[in-house]
Structure formats: structure tokens, C-alpha cells
Amino acid sequence: MVKPMRSIVIFGAVGALVAAVALPAYAASSGPVDAATTLQQVAVDDAQSLVVASAATASPLDRSTYGATTPEEIATKKAEEAAKARAAATAAAAAASSGASSRSFDVGNYALVSPGSGEVRYPLPRGSYTQGRTIGGGHNGADMLAPQGTPIYAAAAGVVRASAESIGGYGVAVMIDSVIGGQSVGTTYGHMTYGSRQVQAGQTVSAGQLIGFVGSTGRSTANHLHFEVWVNGGLYEPYGWLAANAG
Image 1 (tube, rainbow, N blue to C red):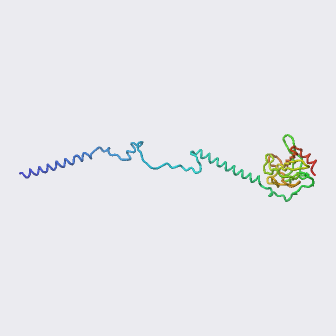
Image 2: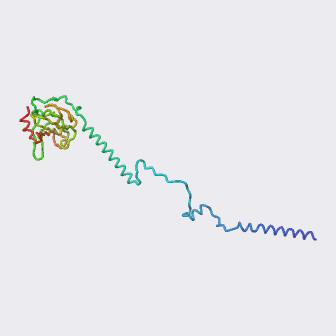
Image 3: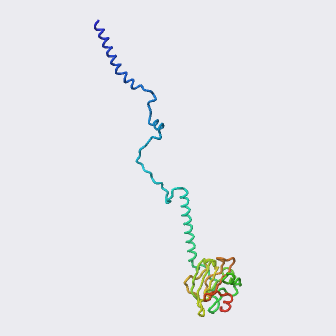
């Protein structure tokens, strides 16, 4: 009888020991289900307080050659550079045209020296032109009307003061300084055909030498030679001066 009672007591003690160990562990593991959270949930619930440390630094935005910060500034810079490029191209073309020698103009069918033997010659062949407007009302020369391509000759020997594809309203023009009978004489030949100049600034020319061809460049509405004569700084009427001196 003693043995069965002893067994019961032992089993009871073991059971109590098991219960004492198991129940606290169970209690610790059996909390509310919503107590468990994930990192993603924390980020969503409190996103503004989420701080991420990083050693990365800001990299400058590559804007090519444009030191601008807005699309408008970049567009303005591009427009300025395009305008500069156009201006450079225009200047280069003008320089090439201005300095171009007219030797390429066909002069094979024209006399290189005008008829006559006098110290003063007619700038256009006799009978090749008709008289147009002369000096007065701000017009400083005589308009000698002639077909395009009519040869133009130096009225007197001298030194070319100017020769260019564009001289103000004269258009393609040549200016020559001469000394005739001890007097300083300047003659101007305007509105020549583009590319027809036969002389350059600084060149010495003889009376009657071919210097260009009639055209309608500059401030002109028809083919003609605008011819000016200045004697000792004073303006002379060209038709009368030629009639009195040319031979």
C-alpha cells in the first residue's frame, strides 16, 4: 500500500514542476497578434521621421558648355552663340568680297587704255553714255548713263586712294588722287559692277587706264557711272571739267 501512494506523490511532484516551468514561457509568448510589426510597416506609419544615413554627395549636373541653370538661360546662350556665328560668317564674306581683286572679270573684249593722249581722259568711251543728273541738291557728281559692263577708265594718272566692293552709297567704287597742272585733283568712280575693279588701294595708275566696269551697285536704281571731280578740295561740275580738260 505504501508503494502505490509513493508513486502517486512522485507523479504529482513531477507534474507540478512541469507546470511551473511551462506556464511562464507560454505566458511570455502569447501576446496580442498585432504587437508584431515589420520594418516596412514602421516606415509607412512614421515615414517623415525615417532617416537614412548616406555618404553620397550631390553630383553637378552636366550642362555641356552652357553655364546656365534654367532652360531659358540655356536657350538664350544658344541663341547668342548662333548670332555670333552668323556675324562671323557675314564678316568673313564681306572681307573676302572687299579684298577680292577683279582680275577674274573678263576684260578680253575691252581696250585696257582709253583713246586719247591728253593728261585728262574721259572716264567712259565717247559715245557710250548719255548725260544724266549732275551736281546739285546734295548730289556731288555726274551720272553718266551707260549699259552694264561698259569699261571705266582713270580720268588722270595718280594713286588709288580707295578701292572696295562697298563704299557707302557709292557701292563698288574707286577713288584716285592726282596732280594736274600743279593742282590736287581727286576723282571718284561709283556704282561699278561687283567684282569688276581692276585696281587696288595704293596702286599707281596712268591716265586712261582701265579701272572697272559700269554697274548699278550701292544707292543706284539704274546702270551708270557716278563720276566726281574735286580740285584743291573744292567740288567741280564733272561735265564742264571734262569738256575743258579732256583730250
